[in-house]
Length: 124
Image 1 (cartoon, rainbow, N blue to C red):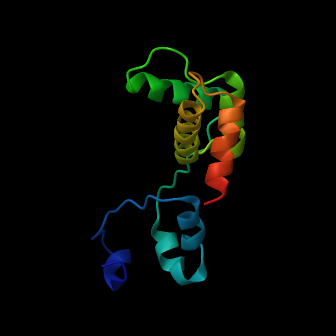
Image 2 (cartoon, one colour):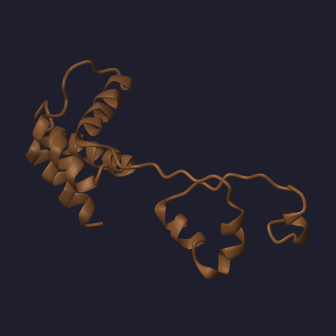
Image 3 (tube, one colour):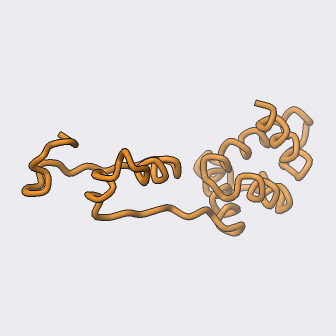
């Protein structure tokens, strides 16, 4: 249906294209020019700020049932810096930092635990 010749005369299809930034770049390529011209509304989610990253991590910790602090400010800053504020990367690094914290016998993820998490995820 995407290549239907009648698409300019009637709206036979409505769809959402949701994806990573690579999808936006790919749609801009010449092979997808007809599709790109038919996209009527675009939205790109921006990265989280440092404050938003801290609030995002705290919110997920709260959803997991913990009210206490599990991440030091320097750990949050390091996670934010390396993840560039991308939520999926924040999730992955925060989880790895919690595992490193547990393995070290500590109760709060600090910058050292964040560093271990970064090293672990960079090695993959």
